[in-house]
Amino acid sequence: MQIDRVPPLVQSVVQVRNWVVEHVPCTDSMLGYDLFLKLGNDLASGHDLPFDTLAGGLPYPPDQVLAHVRRMAEADLVELDDSTAVRPTGRFVALLDQYGREFESRFIVRQNLRSEQLLVAASDPELAAFAQSLYDRVYDMGWLYLHNFGAVCFLMASLVARLAEAHGHTARVASCYVEITRDKLRYLLGGQGLASPGQIDGHAACIIDEAVIVDFGLGNVRRGYRRDFHWGVVCDYRREEHVLGGLAVPGGERVMWKDDWQSPHSEAELARYAPHLPGLLDQYLARFG
Image (tube, rainbow, N blue to C red; front, side, top):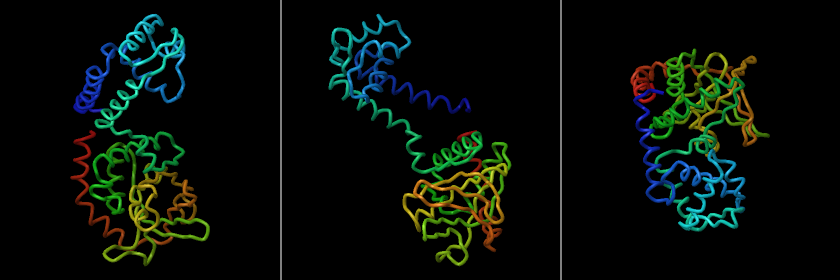
């Protein structure tokens, strides 16, 4: 991580910490702060929390934890039953809810958002992690939704290839089409003769290190096939005749990238978007290094 990116992140963490100290009693020490978070996390169990279990999950002597729990009880944050069970109060729950809103106003809960948008099924864990990180950054740049590059597959595939190369990987753009099948249904993205007015036939995806297919250009699948389809897919590149690779998706479909037919306009489309790539790469590097 670039050092000039650390201060904004640290500032947000500090701002959240300051909010807790200002609004939640008994959190002016690390013990108090950790205890607040521990209780909040364990509250999801829906049961009274045995004190021994609570204290055992914190890196402090039990007598110090007990003394602080008693402070929290005096502040009407918890109820303590004979030093054996700790029960958060309604006031604690309300403050925890406010804390959650404050946190979410400064940070994206990345995992939940990504799980609905990106499907990663690559056998190489390092490349899978790289593709996942690349998706997060492309998303953060607004290229998928604000600028709608996800519906411009030749630009998106070229951009992903350029970004992968900037990170030291080999990458190339593959001219292809996508076949989605389920039972008797067959949907083609970029198939011959299927272009809408103003579009061209064909599709493009990126192949990184001759090992994975990275396709963040599936916007038209969401438009023409299923609105809740993934924004991006990462899978193994395993060529078998005219099939570049494929996978089964949670919706029950089988998705395959094929190149037995390739758009005759592919090279022209790639050349059309090539002048935009240096500027986009500069924007990316300025933000992420």
